[in-house]
Length: 436
Ligand SMILES: Cc1ncc(COP(=O)(O)O)c(C=O)c1O
Image (cartoon, rainbow, N blue to C red; front, side, top):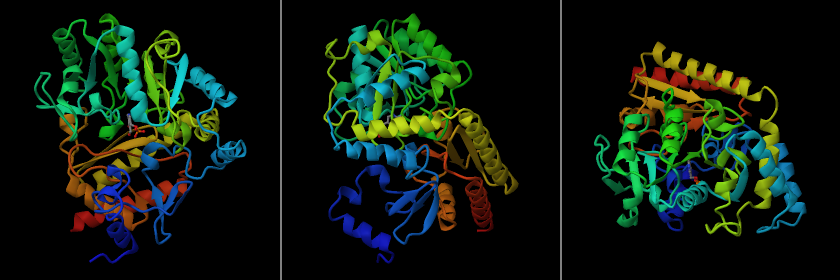
């Protein structure tokens, strides 16, 4: 019998929303229902009882400078005063594109959309049009949104073959013929994929930091190796920076690692929670888009003015000199403190992070470098950890109850007091689990 307001709402919502949620991943698997928000402010979210939690999901990584940020609110206010116009070009669209070209190495030209799914889909169309090839090399488990080519996984994650199976119902097998899959951090497998498909691969697409499996860094030289292989084989390199963008450097992972892709995609942190995404890159490639080229890209809400204004305000905040040095140092300290708590309590867990996003691996003590490593994640232990922290006012989202864990992160609004409270909550939770 449901007892809390949240349980009652979930029961009611199951009669109106499919599965009781507006998006599948909002069903928190460890709560058995969504976490219902009534508002967000700075580092905090508030539940139906107006109870405050320090937020370590921050809108799946979108709220990079904190909820309800005054500069973002003011920017949106400018858009409201302009009449909430959509499907419209304004000087702000050019202003934001010019800023992005200044700060992100790969960017010469920009197009906007609303979601990450749209821009990765457009990026591979540009690649196919530019190379006149059809196949896309992607890494098993990397998440690039919900369009057809990205909804496959390797039938046998340990085999070097092109046997892939859909990772979603309703996906047509015909799309599988154009998907070439390799394991992350394995250049030999990338070489083997190019050997199996000479002259056929239009692009390599990758999350340059694999945050969607927690936080799996590229092995030293791996991104540079991808760059070399793409160039040598006449393929394009696409960095999907929807999640890694702005996370550890203003120029994203490509600036952090000094490897420049041909095309890049951005979303999430770009507009601090407003829906905005970007596909961008070299001018000659972006010219494949109509009206200069033949690849269609449009959309009533593409580059919605309110989101473009929010992005301009967000980037102004993120461009503050010294911000990323401070954030990265704070992040490293925080992750080190969490690992020290785990180790002090002989709690079998590992944290891996870069910049403001991190992964918590439960039941794992060794470095996580591959999908196979991440699949050892203990969801039952994670569930107990997440619920213990929640009871102490700290929110970690749960994305899935099987496979690799999802990601967590913080915003520029998280204060020293928030980090200190979080460490106390984690220590108490870990001690409690140890006593059970
Ligand atoms: C790396 C990456 N690419 C693409 C997407 C899809 O973005 P959206 O959810 O806006 O469609 C995501 C979403 O989490 C992502 O993390």
